[in-house]
Image (cartoon, rainbow, N blue to C red; front, side, top):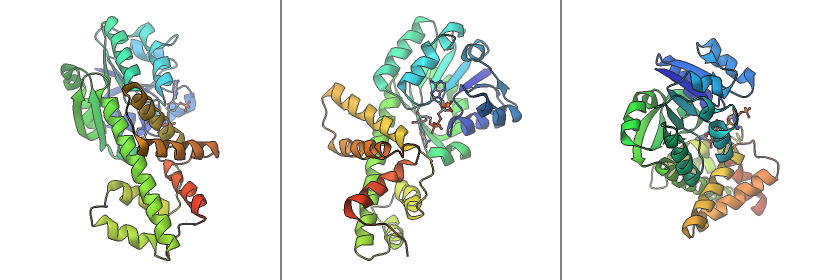
Length: 295
Ligand code: NAP
């Protein structure tokens, strides 16, 4: 079986590398040729265009930035639809709009092809370690066809439901993580302003009900003031936009998610969109005139 992988950024590069390490034949494409060299050095076939990759692949993974990018990769000139073989599967592992996903799945079905939405959680480290959580929408038979490949990239792989259900799940994930980051930042500001070491607060909270992977990992990065991505703030802003659009479509109130959206708008507005989304902490510090410092 020939595999294609489009989008070799922070996530796509290690994910495609793990497919190679598991012994699969992988064709890769990135719009900047230099992004493909690490993969071709490891044995992947570099393709100059998306259509070239699509013509040679039975299962095509996508891991690019936003809804419009996935639409361009699938529907654009000289892209997937122009060259895809019948019965091929397109697996979108980017985080994008659930409603746009349902529409793309219909378009692919009209071309006798299949689509899975399979966004991930677990960050860059999870992608490198092959321990991502993968949340999948689409037909169960197609999920089962792709499962051995998911197993090369992730550990907690859940078939959620029909097309779009994976993206809905990922939106739920981002609503939780955004508020977790904001809550941890507030706790650290409170501790620092009270003359209490936030590192000790983190250590104590990790053993109780406030303990979480977010407190463990993002909390430590906040204490280290390590704003290098990780997960870029402008991508988290995009995820919160998807949450807000979905809330609008369905007539839902998500006030906590709305607040995180405003924080991330301001992070990006301050020119820090390429920094990690834990940069929310810096806004919280500005609001109270406090700098979070571990002793
Ligand atoms: P990234 O490092 O910015 O990589 C995105 C890649 O997509 C880049 O290589 C970019 O190419 C490529 N791309 C964007 N638009 C494209 C287009 N129209 N055509 C072709 N290639 C295009 O981002 P990332 O962190 O890997 O994230 C990728 C996806 O995974 C996003 O949807 C993100 O929300 C999601 N995600 C990220 C994380 C994380 O922790 N980083 C975790 C879970 C999910 P260029 O390099 O040429 O710009």
